[in-house]
Length: 93
Image (cartoon, rainbow, N blue to C red; front, top):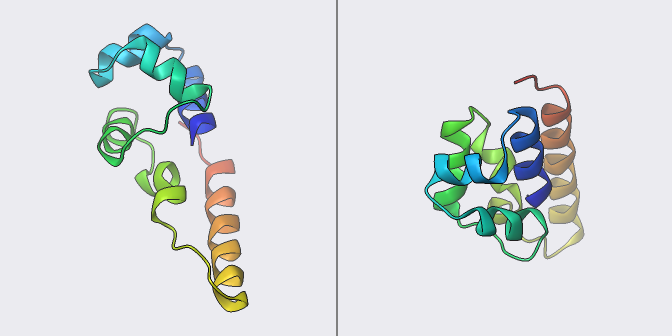
C-alpha cells in the first residue's frame, strides 16, 4: 500500500507537500506512509483514489481481502491478488 501511494505521487510528479495539501494531511504523514511506518485508513485511501483517479480496490486490497484460513481460501486470495497486480501493471494514468 505504501508503495502504491509513493508510485501515484511520483507518476503525478507531486512532492510530499503537494500530495499532503491535496489530501488534507501533513507531509510528515505522507512520508510515514511511504516509509511503511504508518498505515493509511480507508478514508484517506478513498481520497487518494478519488483525487488521483486510481482504483480504490487496488489501494485497499490489503485491508479488504479476507484473511485466508484454509487452502481453498488461500488459493482464492492468491488469485485475487494476482489479478489485482495484473490490473495495476497494465494501468496508465
